[in-house]
Amino acid sequence: MIDAADVRRIALSLPETVEKVAWDMPTFRVAGKMFITIPDDETSFAVRCPIHERQELIAAEPAKFWVPPHEAGSHWVRVRLAELEDMDELRDILVDSWKQAAPPRLVDAFPGRSETE
Image (cartoon, rainbow, N blue to C red):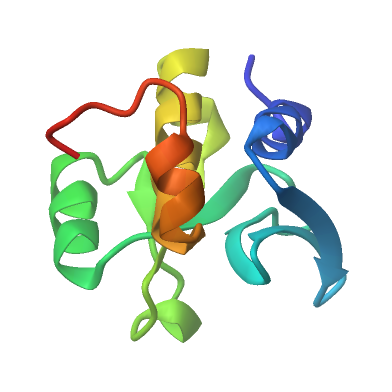
């Protein structure tokens, strides 16, 4: 089963990512911008997500994606760890959030980047 340790391991493998505790929980940042948080119950994590895409994710997979009321106006979505299909899906979600926070020089140099991105 995928757990918070997997989130941490993948997050820290992304270029120039650092872990910093904020609000009594681990957060992960690139170039000073937060792109992942792991709430204290460690059953989910939060990632950056444009609001218009977030609504589509929640509508398509409400058991996996959700937003607590206090984050309704933010550009974040929560992901339930138990609902993830596999490690590839976890990595894809984390990389997508990292790309939203990372400076262009890092995104452009990221391995596996396609020309259509």
